[in-house]
Picture 1 (cartoon, helix red, strand yellow):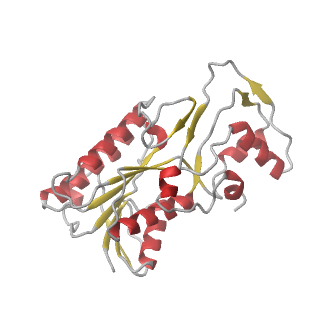
Picture 2 (cartoon, rainbow, N blue to C red):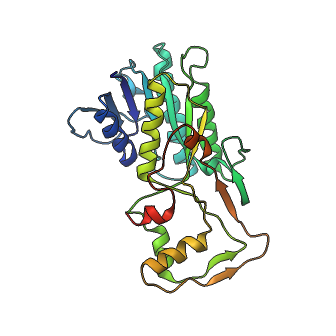
Length: 282
């Protein structure tokens, strides 16, 4: 059955989600702060969430709202402007018109502060180590509280780990530089391919639109929270480069965290790229 969906934040990720939902015959509206795009079967509206007046003409008759926003700059002020104030403006726009569609909100594993190799899931303690992480957590709480007394469906937060795709070159640059990489104790890294970000959001959206209840939180990361040295070494091998030097650190060195994707997998989602090996080969 065709549903009306708003995607607030139609950048690279949001636009890809929109295209998939249109292909499933939903009526999708994309909200962007920059110039409108033209795409068959997909309606774009231009508005800046940080400017409440620009939302005045935004319709509110939607079955579902996906919020996939990014800051204009990555400072503390930039984060607060979009994630707390901007998203707050969007939610207030709906509430002022007594409209409470289900919201699926994209967040980040930055809300976790664990750095000693702990295993993390949706129920793990969230104590962010920086202002941006604390802002993300505040924004999550704002979304989960939206329409709590009026909405018929629970809102949900999706926490992505490090998003990458074929155009992401961060790890490749480290491999090419040939610098020492922490080896002992291992420093774990977590990632999710952009296509699995799209796939998991569409999966959850469809699940909810079909009447199934969502959990309040989903952690979306691939199957392999691998040590950084292992990932860089593998990339070096693929490019015919020397292995990075093994850096031996003090036992107090940061060791990252290991994210579990058990909940999203048990819900029925199957990862297209279950580890960095498949993902970096695309």
